Length: 181
Image 1 (cartoon, rainbow, N blue to C red):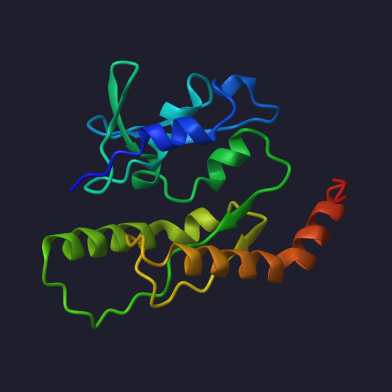
Image 2 (cartoon, rainbow, N blue to C red):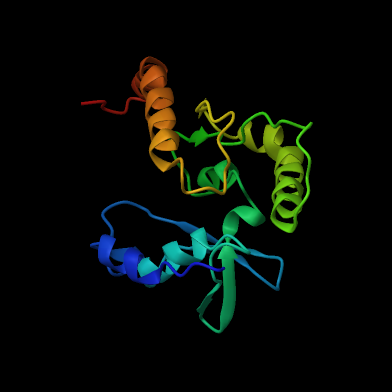
């Protein structure tokens, strides 16, 4: 079953257009049938966020600007280099690719698709993370990436990892003369 999340996103975002946000905001969408990564820096926030989150086989693709978009992470799962191209003073990446259990039996279509994505993402991970000033790595072992059953546990792991990195984050910001208050 493919999930539709458009209405939820529309209700959550207070900014209607990407360009009206007080800070630079980007959603990364992948042209589903064009093999190109697209930076959605203007236009409707809800549609851009939906496009950026449209994981194939899980969420329906988004039709926008005469194109079909899916999750931009399919083509660029760690867009730290993209952040650099926008002259970001500091780039903090979050590595959500848990060390995989390679002994698990892959016995259905979704597991095959999931494992294939992990292999593809893992092949470029180190190279992409090199563009970040700092990497936060939540402990997501034993938590399936494509499950909504563990959302609170996943959130808590990310929060704990970010909190653990706060001394380094503050040090990095201070070194770049960026106020931490």
